[in-house]
Length: 115
Image 1 (cartoon, rainbow, N blue to C red):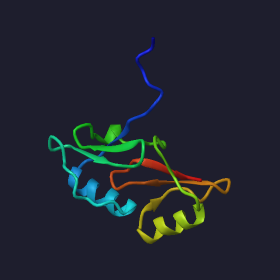
Image 2: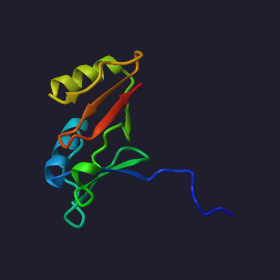
Image 3: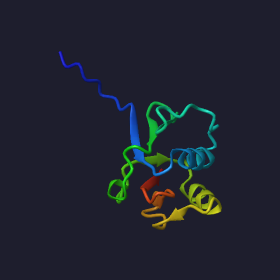
């Protein structure tokens, strides 16, 4: 019997400063930033079944995502685009095919929002 589950527990994002990254992501997703920073380099964002794990120990400029490694979900792509602009997030594409766009976090990681 295969002991592996068909489930993803978390996605790691390399960040240069765990505290600044925690505050930025928590503000963006309106999540309280009162969770524990583990081992002085890990912060877990509870995002439903799959968590985002910010990790400053794995950060290096060459480790930053240059293509979207994570897709965040929205039910209203136009509202999400407008919201991201209002937060002064660096948006790097327009809304494409009517259902997705890419943006960068403060460390330059490319991420996606999709309907």
